[in-house]
Image (tube, rainbow, N blue to C red; front, top):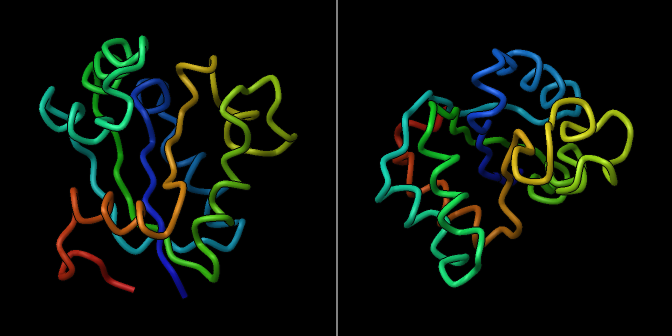
Length: 138
């Protein structure tokens, strides 16, 4: 078993899609082992997306992620990172496969409803930003 990190983004929480998104996640065989709803601060969003600091969309991304609450969660499965990335679908919802979260729920490339870690290493870093070990119950 391995773990990955997931965020249900503000465009999805605003539309009350948390349960629908989690139903797809669980149906794909990923287990939610930690979860909470939070309102990211500017500092949290800037730290989390720091890898994009020099990119032109950084300010807009931080603004979107702090506008409304998000749901942060830890998912567990065999090969959790690639499995969840497959469930999420392509960043551009127009290119996402049928049945993926982004095809089903995203509004645009920028408002793509979910985030998922891109590697096991980044999953560990991202999980640690929001959860302590005792908050993850497998």
